[in-house]
Every structure is written in C-alpha cells, then in structure tokens.
Length: 415
Image (cartoon, one colour):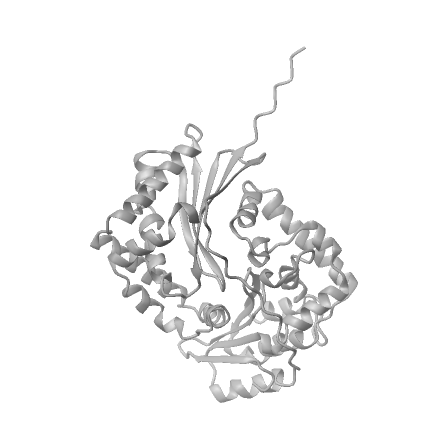
C-alpha cells in the first residue's frame, strides 16, 4: 500500500471463517542493552486499548463474536492474530488498524503490564526447573546482543522502562511499513482490499528501523558451562551447534538430519540412548531457523543413576556415526513422511496459513516458501544429510550447558 504496508490475501471458501494476521518486523533482536523486554512488553500493551477501542475490548469483541485471538513474540518477529466468522472481517480489520494507528500508552497501563510481564517471567523462568538454563544457554551460545539476551527481558530493564521509551519503540517498529497484513478465508478479494484501504491506508509510515547485525562469526572452539539449579530434580544437558541463516541452501537437509537423529521415539538418539542404554528419561531437539544465525539443538534429561558426561559421550557417538555412514533409505523416507505430515497439518487451518505466510515474509522475505517447502525436503538426499552433519555438528561449533540439581540441604541434628 502507499504507506508501505504489505498485504497478502488468500481466498478459501471451504468454510465460512476468516483469519487476520498482522506480523511486525520486530522482536527482541531489535532491543538495546538496558532496554530489553520491550518487544514482549508490547505484546501485552497492544491489548490495552487505542483511540476507539477500550482497555480489553479487543478480546471482548472477538470472543463475543465467536472468534479466537492472541499474540506472540519471539527474538525475530511479533504476531497478532484472530480467527472469526466470515461476516466479521471488517471488525477484525478495524481492531488491528486502530491499535496500529493510535495505541493508548499511559503510565498506568505501562505499570500494569510491566507487572504482568514480570509475573510471567517468574512463572516461566525464575520459578521453573531449568528456566534459567535455557536463558543462560543463549547468553553463552551467541556473541551478538540481538540473540544473546532473552525475549522476556530482565526485571531491572522492565523496571527502568519509561513511557517515553515505550512510545518511541511503538513509533519506530509498529508502523505500517514495518508490518505484513495477511487475510486468509472466506472473502472476496476486491471487497477485502476496499476494507483494508479504508482502515489502514491513512496510517502514516515511519523511517525504516535501524538494521541489526545477526550473523555470527564462525565459532572456533567449544563453549562449555555448568549451572546449578535448586529447582531441578535431575541433571540436564543442553547441546547446540551454530548453523546458517534461515532458509539457506542447507536448511532442508538439516531438518531431515534432525528428524533422523532426534525426531520421536523411532529416532536414533531415542532408540540408542533412552531405550537401549537407559541413560536418559527424555531426549530430543530441533532446528531453529532465524533471520540470522540459527541453531541445531539437543536436550537430554539424565536419569538419576547416570552421569551427564556418559550421556554426552553417547550423543557424540551417534553424531559420529551419522557423519561417517550414510543414513538408510527407509530413514530418509521416514523423515520426509514425518515432515510432510507435520507441515500439511500445520497449514490446514486458515489461521495457521495466515501465520505462516506473514512469518515467511518477515523472516525469509519469501512468502512463496509456503508452496515450495515440501519440494525442498523431497530434494534432500542421503549424501546431503551426511554432508550437513559433517559441516555443522562439529566439536569447535558446539556449545554445552550442563544443569545440575542443587545439593540437598544438610539434615538438622536431632534433639
């Protein structure tokens, strides 16, 4: 549109529903030292009212009209979304446009949502077993600030946030030229475009946000740290390997590698380390694609009668095997099938398709990836899997954080 807002429309008349998604090109990667947690704070602030919508009314209007809605924040993007009966498209667009245009930022609302975010931090990080471990892992794994700090932010930074700081963050990042609007569902294209122009086109654009360098230099030595957690009841081993940026040429092969190595109960790590050797009570992992440098992660919860170093050695043995010997044909086909099933299930609903389209546009500048993702997976060969294992799952590119339960407190002497 004239103000830089990117609009994506996908007509789907199979069911009388519409999904509206607004994806903002902002996450915790855009924060500065001393001002962390802003992207996540805004996920909360955006529901506190705007010029024509009262505090909490966004929820009320969507829910009372038979819809569902929420928001989510990550290191790379922030997403707001709602799914509603098809006859409520105009209302959904109005609600999203009004808060993009005129969010009501006051000291009282900031104080209220600051407390809500701090309570969320206590629940998810500070008072959760291994909560601090996951936060600390990124601090060790990454060098550049964008990904090095947690999305939820620190208590100190949240307390220090001012109304001016918050208003500036909104002005810079919540502008139409920094957003993608995606509508999927039962509508007519021309009618939807007319409503979008009516609601969004007069919202002024802003100067482009400052760029953030998110590509890490190649790691040259293993990084290792131990952490004691008074809430943990069993040791845990977190292992991460740096990979390339999202949607690069190796991502599909890395997804297949992850599926073979740690995708479910038939995977190599589960079968060997959990089922046969009985070293862990749980093991698994995933590949995280990011705008910048991503990661290949493995998490193992060690059984009380075993040692973390034994579990680590067993994991590296399986990695060595997959690096030296091509995977079997049936393993490749299983990984393809599992990926295909998971992906097709993920795009069944209008809401998920809207989320994926907006995310692919911001993350990878490639909305058409929704149509080519499976082709990339199907093109992966056994040699590709072996090649990326050798390239990325190497000792010098590895970060390891071992969490140990706090020692039991000494028993008080009897009378």
